[in-house]
Image 1 (spheres, rainbow over the protein chains, first blue to last red):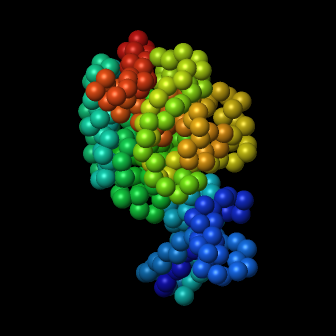
Image 2 (tube, rainbow over the protein chains, first blue to last red):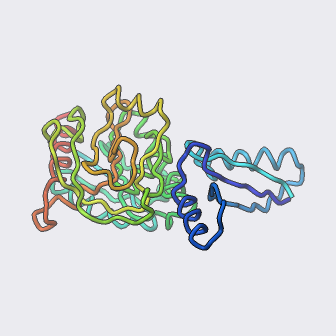
Image 3 (tube, rainbow over the protein chains, first blue to last red):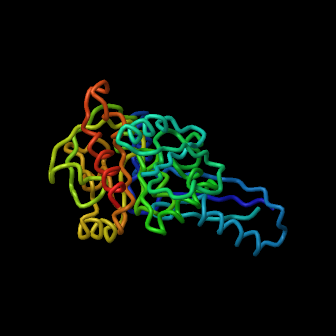
Length: 79
Length: 222
């Protein structure tokens, strides 16, 4: 089973890289980009076939390693 | 006084840190990250700068889950001393031994230059070698040194006098200009500037030397 983990900076945490991307988009003529947040996508190939167990496993991985929960939030999608 | 300097794949300030500690009078052992245990009878564990594990995932994230790091956490929980410099500071925040985190520099650039700092507290073994409020100059060399913590954590750091060093002119966007912080028991210090790179006249400055001299002196006396 595949789990797709999306890690993003939490709201309220300044994202200087996202800001730089926003400025670059503006200078390319893309008007009206009011905000850019940059994050990470991590794909996990899991041996687990039970959906609930796979989700619990992926969330434990996020808590312990994949996300720094001081500044990052995460989302797990199963595919 | 016995010290260990950890070595991860990608550490590059480990030998400089060992030299600075040895010259201050410490008996230093280098410890590879795969070791599950630290040498017995250690007073201090030093986590060096560099790019442990290529900064993959997040700076310090993989090193913080290395076998040796569990032993470092146990050492700290027993009241042992821990010093983390630059990447070492990032590793210590990733382990949770120090609060907050180090984000990408606000200007997005890697900055490598001597930086004026203020010694914000002398109430620790690490900073006892300085005068209160002393202005010192120590090199920084980092891409991710922008200290971030929630408002409660910042209030706690301030209230408990745990901010060890601040930047005179904030180079990286750190909250409150924080360059280094102490743990609640004041025995764990993390700082982004490199005192081991200003510990010899040949470095062009010796403002880092009192940190090592003060620390080794305090632990020898203990």
